[in-house]
Image 1 (cartoon, rainbow, N blue to C red):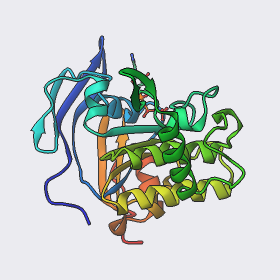
Image 2 (cartoon, rainbow, N blue to C red):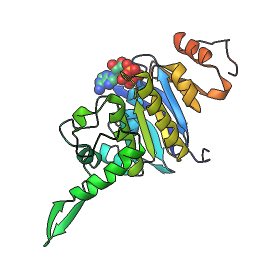
Image 3 (cartoon, rainbow, N blue to C red):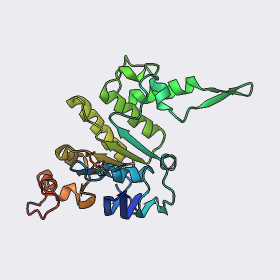
Image 4 (cartoon, protein in one colour):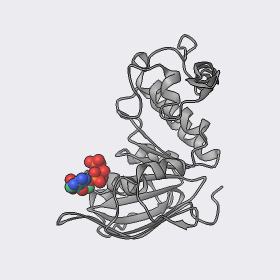
Length: 258
Ligand SMILES: Nc1ncnc2c1ncn2[C@@H]1O[C@H](COP(=O)(O)OP(=O)(O)OP(=O)(O)O)[C@@H](O)[C@H]1O
């Protein structure tokens, strides 16, 4: 169930890349415990909006509020510290490191022997073994295996498990099921729903309006740098939403509940 104060509030966001107007007065609320489908055609501005939230781009004007506080500085490290994790198909894991090392990438636990700090491999292995089982990795995969040998769906599971274990509050899934088999896609989508049920905000970027309509509580459509629709999935069919994207926000008559 979504809480009343939005976890993230975006207010009148404008972003220019030089003379190019990439985000045009975008305002949108994102609530904890909600799964939001962020959709729109190629170049609509979805990734740019997310990059502002992740501290990669500083907006030209407008405001972002996180958990009731205005974000003053845009920096990826600050966004990560606030509990923001981005899950993309192709990035986020180092192929030549073990699952355990990937799990703790940048947050490696340290223990001291005679005052000398050393990486706590046992802790990394034990914790990541537990999590990868919970997140459905095959029994013959061990936390010591290199990520290279994992399937696309298993890689996504490691990233999602990491987000949960480190108590992330926001998980941004950017085309998380691209190139996955039907089964793996279902598994990743089930995990996305499980994350929102645990109270996380899940922002799910995709081109597959029909897939995300089944999962999401709300769909936000972007077009040419603008937000052109923000609708509860219970209030609008996937067909109607697809029509809005097809027509680029021009008035669509074919609305209605699913
Ligand atoms: N760093 C940048 N410099 C200049 N233009 C950029 C930059 N990043 C994005 N753009 C432009 O901003 C527009 C929006 O791009 P964005 O990546 O946000 O679209 P998108 O909705 O995520 O598209 P896709 O679904 O294809 O990934 C595009 O026209 C893109 O070329």
